[in-house]
Length: 492
Image 1 (cartoon, one colour):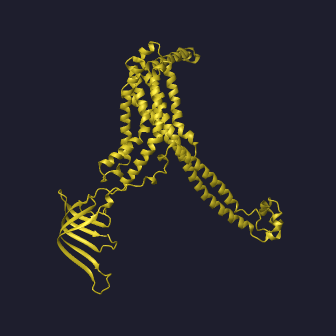
Image 2 (cartoon, rainbow, N blue to C red):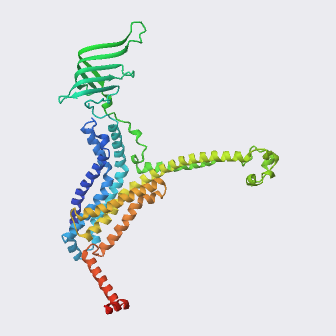
Image 3 (cartoon, rainbow, N blue to C red):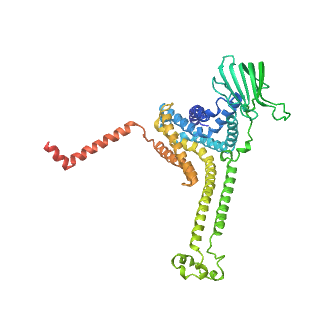
């Protein structure tokens, strides 16, 4: 490896690792904030949250990598230009293309890595992450009693307290026991209480002091005649055990999530696409076959004489009904045809909605298949923008490169979202919609690369200042040559 390649790669790896860590953190934070309300306050332990954040971190790698490549390439070649290293290299007769070449090889490997990542790691991370997220979302939040408010988090119980102390003890406790679904027939009132859990948090223990237990309709089912409508039991100290199973996280069967497109590899998406298209074509053919059964122009019940008539007789039903045979004149064929047409119209509208759902599923599957490649190729496209642009701007650091990177990333994001919308609605060919952002940005990349190879001073203010002065000089010269302006100046 030549010294030039070592110099360029050394200038690239540092910014790349830093920018990738920063972009990964930003997108991971955005992902967490998106589901924060659904996962916060769940008593599931830090290890579960750690696993969830790990899966989330893997999910955002394909999104953060293009931005990291854009930023790092801008900073790398911007630093080389700012400290005149790029100028020294070019003065030695080495072109910008030769300087970019070692980093471009690295970017090709990164592109291949992201493609492999999208095909293997990301589906696994999506499956694990979203199934774990579902488990956390369906887990009840940590039990918390608010003063003067009924708490219904415990299944079968409604509990109210008037005061809660710092040591966890409670004052004036009211418990409605609905565990038997018999209404408010079992009520417990206590002057004070304290709570704690046993058996690893499986049961919550209410230790009650100085209270009364009220039970209505006691033992009415015995039928021995010795029943009471109401029972009242006073106590000075008692315990009530409540199952806390609903507050424990129970793992969900991951097979329930495997049918989603983001959980599948390229091969699986390709097979699903073929199956969806084949089923769609069969559904269309079956619709045509079923629809033909509802038309009466085949004269299935019109008699022998009607079978010999040409098919143009349908038009004559409206214009020349009297010309039809007597067997047809006596039947109200027009009303029957109208009723049949309305029935078929309703059926066709229903079938159209079903077919639209089938097409939408196909579009989503094909879109996800294309995104496996577009997110990988976007790394290469971003490099084609960042490397020549950094060589032209000649500014490193996190200032101007960050601003430029944000502009192009927002453009890529907007085009991607818009393309996905068009693809899912079926208004644009799915491959074109999926690759739209890369195609547009590739045009920018080729333009900037051409300017960099030609040593263009595209972003230097002096170039535009000189061009503006020349334009002013030409305008003044044209003004002096124009007769109209000459007459005005002479008159003044």
